[in-house]
Length: 141
Image (cartoon, one colour):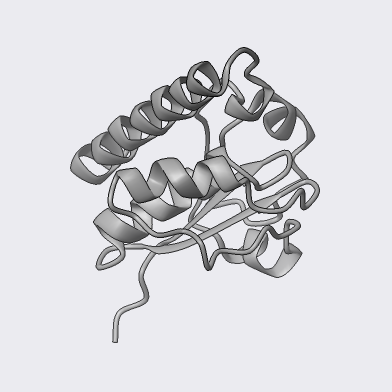
């Protein structure tokens, strides 16, 4: 069996953006890619992220919030950071063949306002990440 390229999504807390990206790539491209996500810290899975992904038909409720694993980082084919903090503080990647990209998205967990406004922020970020995942699957970048 041919080894699928490993995509490792990284964020600060592995609670929202990296989980959404992980969920979409698993749902749309698990036939082509192995998918993992992690954070510089583990903040737990954000319930609003679970909710907006469920609205999009993707169940991430069984995902866990994990800290970056050096072994996974070393064997990743793609390392994609989803927030500036993770991009700036990502550990040194020993694998010289890794493709490292930064896809910056606002942190919906920092949204303020009414519950409706906060959920709108989560939906906007979710939809932006989905668009980026679809482009990655189509173009490989």
